[in-house]
Length: 490
Image (cartoon, rainbow, N blue to C red; front, side):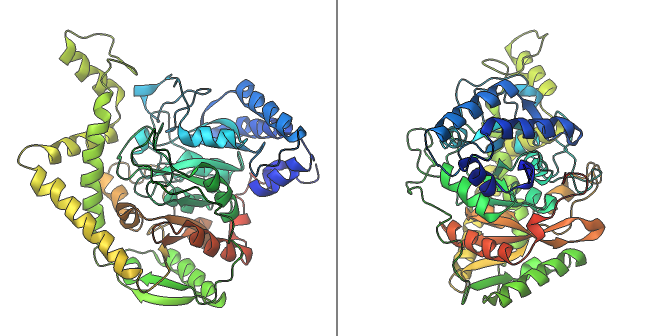
């Protein structure tokens, strides 16, 4: 092989497989060796070479029969929040250690039907609760750009695995920024589609009105191929799934950007934004000008309120969703207890981590009698107002651009004793999540310590194709998305 599979984008790898330059089994073995070699990143929680190679053999048979599906034979890996039959699912928690699902999540199933080969399951913050991947019961993931720093969260395992070329693409989930922020911290591309575009069936629930699946890869083109494969209605399994037909998100990637109006929210460029991040974002916006776009000054006045609103709503929904983990039907059960109530208490005390307990307690409080109206109901009202802010903004622009996070990735442990500091790092991603809008992160430069910086692009509802077009055109004329962390190129 003149170019090793891990040095290719997903789309190039798929083309090489169709040309029979190598087999899907050879590619799967190549990546499984890399996963083992770089196990110190702690990105993978589970692999099963036998299961992966069986999928690869099936893909080779389809390729030999003349099939040419865009993802046929390419390896991927799944955030361990998606249930899978062939691999254990833990959601990063001791509560589900060793759990085997009898079915695949819809996202997993659809990618499998498209011919993708699953290499394994990826580490994540426990029940997807966190911004640094330090809340996993199985240890923190390390950022391949600097192993002393966080890869971001909760999809930190997915971001680190793609950045280190352990896999060409991965699935993630985004509740308040958990695709965009780790993509930014690890220098890769990630997109969260419009809420309801991708089925939540088989995703271990955190906050049901916010959770959304999305792809993480090196390029916008790769993300478009993945998104096209797994989006679409799933009415029999997910009541929140939108009745919007699946589409080919790669259809307009090369369209010119002449006349594109990019909104720049003044609230995203205040005192809390680090100078190195601002410099990279300003340079990226200037580049969009050169590509023919026009920058428009806009305002999202309720940006600061997105943090308390999100952490009330998300905690309330987490409190409800996680009540099912009680030791009765599945998951961990305490070894010693005196009665049913004692079993509940000991099971949950033993198996839930501190951050999960914190959010359950907050959620239970804001839903309790006497506080529901004061907190949860008020948060929902402000959520509607935040969505209205975006509606008004999109009357003036086609896309919104700004930073993903106020800083580059911080050192592991730097914010462990201050959960609020972690929450504040989500200020730029939360508004779009609360409104249910599509959003993505694309690499746009480097900041302090040579760490990647991501540019956030937000679109109007069902605007994924336009987002991907803007990202792809940027990546055609820059090389930030092609750069790899030292030690992982070969």
